[in-house]
Image (cartoon, rainbow, N blue to C red; front, side, top):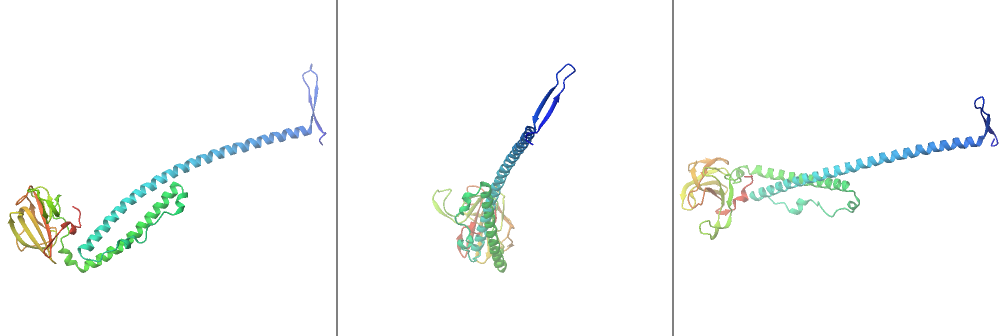
Amino acid sequence: MLKKKFTFMMIPGSSGISRQINIPLVAIYLSVAAVLTLLLASFFLSAQFFTDRVTENQLEQLRQENVALQNKFEKMRWNLAEVENRYSTLVKKEASIRAIFELPEINEEERQLGIGGPEPPMLAVMTPGRKSAYLTELEVDGLLTLSQFELEKFGEVEEALLKIEDRLRHTPSIWPAKGWLSRGFGMKHDPFTGYLQMHRGLDLANRTGTPIIATADGKISKIGRTTGLGKLIVIQHGYGFVTRYGHLSEIKVKRGQKVKRGDVVALMGSTGYSTGPHLHYEVIRNGKYYDPRKYILNEK
């Protein structure tokens, strides 16, 4: 078979000479095989080229998605930080309520619930995206656990407070007026003499005529005027609590009148020993002066 040949006759025009070409059959087979090989190689290389291009595009897309997810997780962690701040504020308020009403305090170690510890070793081999996802998930789980714990503790506080509802209404627990704190409780410099002396309340400064409200239910036990506090009123709340309001411009209540928390009892002024319009506010319990901020639960 290898010796077989194909004979091709080439016949030109009438004046030309005819020619005969003999081509071995094996040469034809080899030529066909070579062409097929070239076609297959071209097809394979083209397929590989396009596959590489697709893979490259997919990788670039995955990179972009990874960056987007990383940014999203970073934003989520900022939001979680804000939630944690609010949670901390909530815990502080709960602690204040417990202190005011002499409820059992919660140990700080108990509040942690065993959450925390060193980072697991696997974080070192994680991609940035997976690491962000893992840490965010940990923070969410931890916050949910702490929130559930705090919810239970607030339930305990609510149950305890329901039993002392009347005492709650008669406990000073809000700001007595709008304004800014110009002087706090404790040893402070006297604005007239410059000497340090005990300041037994809070000074809230604002415009003359700013409404002043009762910080708890009670009864007006005194209306008067002194050299130091100028026009003043005293409210007897019961349960050992008394509040005093000084430097008033106008008094809106009468002696013996019952008032509710939030009722307007006077207007801010600058009477008595004063450098400008403000309210001097005191909280007295069982004859002892306390920092009023210890009893204030609302925001100004």
